[in-house]
Length: 498
Image 1 (cartoon, rainbow, N blue to C red):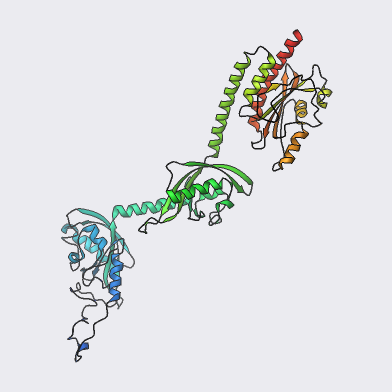
Image 2 (image 1 turned 90 degrees about the vertical axis):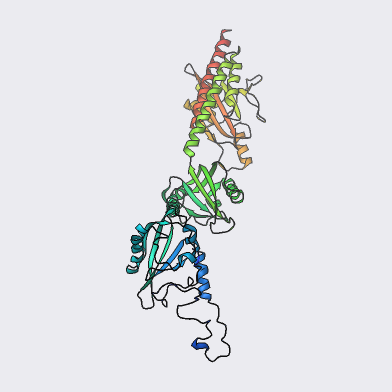
């Protein structure tokens, strides 16, 4: 609030101030004292009266009042205006010289019809402890009206009796805007339906709401001041880069999505957060000084996984449709088999192996792996199409317990992977032991069945840089296997007929 700018305006209503009228022009202290008068008793008989020291207390009060953000005026016990700061002048247009010394607001700051009620409500603060809040319609100097919200309180003299009233006021819409801003911030930082984290310039959380604490897997106080790297196992680099960008350049124009892996008491879990950012700057500084970043996010993992699954299903359905149409144009059924596998391999696996049973094998021979013959496969050392093995009549000698033999035994599918975190040499040995390409780390074996007979095993392999096969992958592999088994059965039937 601005300071009072008339001659007695720097004098605060205090213990030494009486209940008289407004200070006289030129008065620099308490009414009745005149240190500048050479005829005063203190200077009698002196050749020259010393120059009085500056009233630093009055200057300080004037500066404080002038620097306030709210309008302030004060009245003595008789209702005479004694203080009027710059913010009051800005709101109403009346200067301190025009306001100080007037009795009440009647006829200049309030309509005469309302003056008695307004004055009575303001001065009533002298008889009541604490602050009183009112709303009044005041008049500007140009004649327009403005609705203000006031807080008034009494000022006590040295004898403990009321000596006047001070009144701080601001425009109602500005006050309501402030209250809304405070209410909004409190609501966001309590139980908002999305996460809110305030991050300082060192990228450490300073405020965390309830949603964010649940998403980050910690308490609202235990998360404060901790580096994000202690909470996020993977994806923290991208998140911190976004926060640094906001501090340097400002908020991005659209939300961003981050996939992160969190470290929780139950283990690691992967989540997707749709995030928005706001750069926080101090409203009190002359130049924008960043205080940190407001990070708002919502967990959209379920939505993203459902969307990814829908996209994957749409792609695989399209691939199967194209594969069937292509296979229907193949004259040789085994050529149709390799075409089906080429289409099925796209985006699904890195390698595919087709092992068929010899004609009329016994169950024991199949279980021992003696009569499973490698019929078609993709290159083991580089990506490539699935091709028939030249002269494919050599049995694949799978050892006992091999996943392909388990698939035959179960008449279903078997998923397996190398141990998580194994070294590259150990993973390569794991694949070589099972007679698979050395870069294989995840396998899915599914049996080929047609007309109630087992015709072989179809094996899909993925490298270590891809995820392991999951249940939806098994359903897709079994669909492909059913189509391949039909083509293989047709090939055998045609060969037998010839």
